[in-house]
Image (cartoon, rainbow, N blue to C red):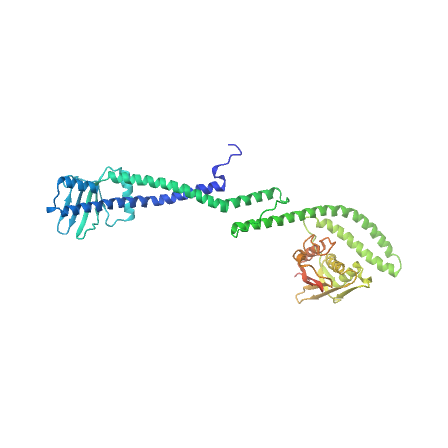
Length: 464
C-alpha cells in the first residue's frame, strides 16, 4: 500500500458522513416492521369495509338473493372470494358456490397486538401470496355480530411487497440527503474549526518560536470559539516563555565566560585588599574592611552563579544571623553611610535574629535597597523595619519615598527581565523572589503610590 494512501475513514468528515448515513438507516430499519404491519392492516380493513358494503347490497335485495352476475360483480369489487356477515337474527352469504373448502390461515383483526401484526406481515412476505386466507373483523353496521371474508393473498402480497420496496428506497434517499445536510451543517460548525485548530497546533509544534501571521479573533460564543481563543493565548504565552528561556540560555553562557575572567580579576583585588588591611590608619582600615567584604561577596557570587546555572538551585545554608548587622552591611555596600543627602533609617531591634543564609539574604536586601535608592535619585529616604511574630516568623519591610510602581508592570514585577525602572536588568526582584522562596518564605509588594513603595519579606523561624 503506498505511504500516501489514506483509508476513507481516516478523516473526521468522512467518518461523520458514514455514521450519519448508518444512523438514519438504523432508524429506518426500526420503523420498517411497524410500517409494513400498518400497511397490511389498512389493506385488510379496506377489504372488510368493501365486503360489508356488498353485504348491505345483498340485504337490500328481495329475499336476500341476487343474480349470479351481480353476486360475482359485488365480490370482484370488494376484492374477496366470499363473505359472511352474521346479524342477530340471520346470516348473509356471498360466494357460497366458489368458497374454497380449505383456507391456509385465519387472521382476527378485532383486537390485534403490534407483535402479532408485525409477525403476520412478515409471514405474508415469506409465503409469496400463495395462500387463501380468512379475515375476521369488526363490522360497522349496528346489530352485526361478526364480519368474515375469504380472499386470495396474492393481491395483498403484491401490494405489501411494492410498499416494502418503496419504504427501502425512500429510506436510502432519506438517509443520503439527511447525511449530506447533517454533514454540511457539522462540517461548517465543527469540522472546519477543528481543522483550523489542527493546522495551528501542527504549525506551532514545527516552529514554536515563529511569529504567525495575524489571525482574526474568533468571536464565537460557544465552546469552539473559547478553545480557539484559549489556544491563541496559550501559544502566545508559550512563545514568550521560549523566547525568555532562549535569552536566559544566552545570558547563562555569557555569564559563565565572564565569570571565569572575573574570578581572576577579583583574586587580584582580594590580594590588594589584604594589603590595605595591614596599613595602620583608621580611614584606610574602614575602607579596606568594606572592600574586603565586597570582594568576598563578589567571589562567592561568581561561584554561586556557576552552580545556579545547573539543574539544581543552591540550597540555603541557614543559620541564626543578626538582622541589624546584615542591614548595616547593605548600607556600607551602597555607600549610604557617607551620603549626607540620603537618609537611611534602620528600625530593627539589635537583638533581632533571623534564621537564613546570610549571604543570600544580604543579596535580597541589597537588591531592594539599591532599587529604592535608584528610583529616588540623589536625595531620598529608605526605611528598613522588622518585627517577629509569636511563631517566630520575621516580617521585614523596605520602604522608600519614590514615585511608586506603574500599575501596568505590577503583575510581572517579580518575573525575570521585567524591570520596574529605566535602565534596570529585570533580574534583581526575580533573584530576590527565588531566594526568599527557597527559604520557605514569601516576598511581595505591600503597597505603592505617589508617596512611596513598600516591599514585605516574610521568613519563617527555625524548623522543628
